[in-house]
Image 1 (cartoon, rainbow, N blue to C red):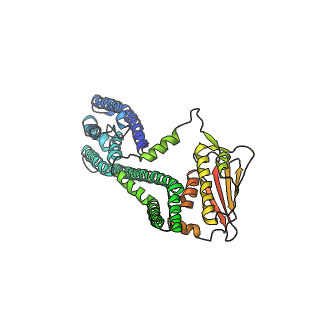
Image 2: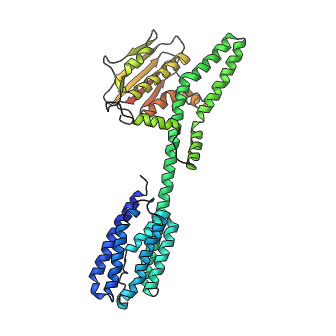
Image 3: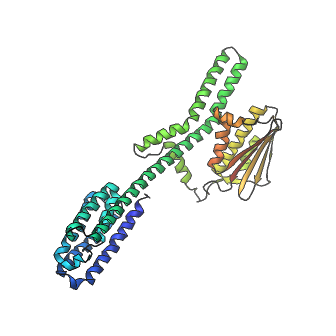
Length: 404
């Protein structure tokens, strides 16, 4: 819902309530009018106009400029008609005009629809009509008119600020959606393409001959691909700027993810998978898997992403600790969250190495592990010291980030 929609609803209520107030004033002073029937005819027109145009002020789309001009005309006519049906003494005493404070509703319509400039124009017209009706610049008249003018301009300015804030929020959401989609793709690339390119580079250098050139080319492509991945947020902001100048259409990948995330399962409940079953293929002669004796069910997305993060952690063990390193996977099924700990007996990680790797574009930890868990509302923590191995603690909520 637009941030200004509550203002339109409030304006609708204001018009109805101020009409009732104007009718009450007319009924109370009926005997004091010079021409009560003439005043009554205008009040009948005002009542019919308000009733017939209730829907016109319910939204910005229905409240057109043509309607606003007509609404202001009804108010101004009522102000200028007042001296013709009321007594001079009552007018001199400051008796309200026929439409009374209903007139402010017409001005507020301009403020909400077009901002402070439209509000200033409409309130100026009303001020001029009131001065003509009073026959001069009476002190109470000037005070009232200044109040109307300042209030309408202020409301118009607030509406403009609210609209700008709404556009900024929409742009930020588009940037976040595009960035998350790029990070998801980057995780998949890191788990497949980048690792293959790195392996080809190492094997090419080891074999020598023509394979050396192939390894060199693979290394260049790996660097180029890492650079492309690491520039994702800047590109996302550029895409959002383009979207601000065009129709707000979500990226195809984001739309697909959203549709998948919002689609309910066939039986109305989210599909769940056993985390232990997904982690079982990692067990081997040098990888020990320990966990509860019963299945550890998680929502499908959470189980899959957590298992992939564990796989990325084991890849880091093989790459940095060597093929001879041993690893242990411990699964803890707690009431509110599931914790998976991956520990190895390798040489450990020097202090600051993770931050350096992320700055260099090596995003295995940043995207394949931290990024996955962040999207699930979880966390990843590293405990390591040189010569004492590395321990990675991965946590995800039982129901996932969105409570599915």
